[in-house]
Structure formats: structure tokens, C-alpha cells
Amino acid sequence: MAIERTFSMIKPDATERNLTGKICAMLEKNGLKIIASRRTRMTPEKAAQFYSVHSERPFFQSLCDFMCSGPIIVQVLEGENAVLKNREVMGATNPEDADEGTIRKQFAVSLEKNSVHGSDSLENAKIEIDQFFTDEEIFS
Ligand code: IDP
Ligand code: MG
Image (cartoon, rainbow, N blue to C red):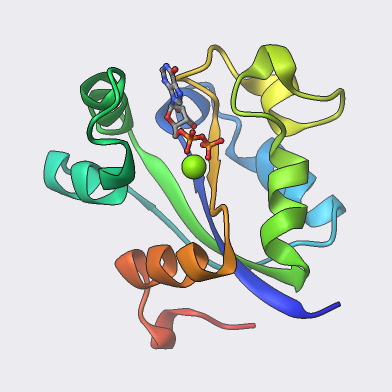
């Protein structure tokens, strides 16, 4: 297995409920090392760019509004098979479908307000990391 990097976000529904530490602890417990982290806010432009793959979906505008509604934490995670591992720790997009013990099962409020984002491929991980971090901000 290869050491990979993936991009993670803690979404506004989770920062609002002060769950940052609990979510980071679950990532770390599962072998994902937080090698960059910053609390910030999405702008409407940045949200639209980040979720552009979903621009034709009916939930797009609501999703962008939600992502701008409060602070987020942007992170780079590193570890064995980090892309897939993070998706496993996150759980299914819809918390109703998420497995026990996953972040979304434990913390998500709804299909939209599902507490965390994680890159879905190594290729997208690199694109997403580059949208938020320079190489000088990442320390493994
Ligand atoms: P993912 O976050 O598990 O990769 P995606 O399908 O990429 O899921 O969707 C991106 C985000 O858009 C989801 O995490 C969720 O916040 C939101 N979303 C996805 N599908 C729906 C929907 O049907 N209604 C409302 N929001 C949705
Ligand atoms: Mg996705």
C-alpha cells in the first residue's frame, strides 16, 4: 500500500457544534495524520469552484450557501491509502446509509449537512489540496 495525501474539510454544521476536536480524533485514531490544517471560510466563488462538478444538480446552490454559512476547517491528511481510508472513516454521503462508527453516522445532521468532505480520488485530492494549500504550508 502506498502513502497518500488527501484533502479533508470539516463543514459548517460541525464547526457550529464545536465538533472539530472530536472529528480530528477520529481521523487520527484511524491512522490519518493531519499534516496541514486551517480554519477559514468559503466565499461563494470558492464554493462554486470547489463543487463545480455538481453545478447542474438541484442541490448545488443550497450546498454552496451552506458551505459559506460558517467557518470550515481545511486539512491535508496523510497515511496508507489515505484517500480510501478517509472515505471509510467519513461514511456514506447520506448519514442514513453510513456505517456505525463513521463520522457521518455519528455527527451528520442531514444529507446536505453531513459534517465532513473527503476527496474521492488521488487525482482530485491533488487538485483540492492545491486549491487551499501551498507546499510550504504542509508538514508531514
Ligand atoms: P461526498 O461528499 O460524499 O463526496 P457528493 O456526491 O460529492 O458526496 O456530494 C457533495 C456534497 O453535496 C455532499 O457531501 C452533501 O453535502 C451534498 N449533497 C449531495 N447530494 C445531495 C442531495 O441529494 N441533496 C442535498 N445535498 C446533497
Ligand atoms: Mg464528493
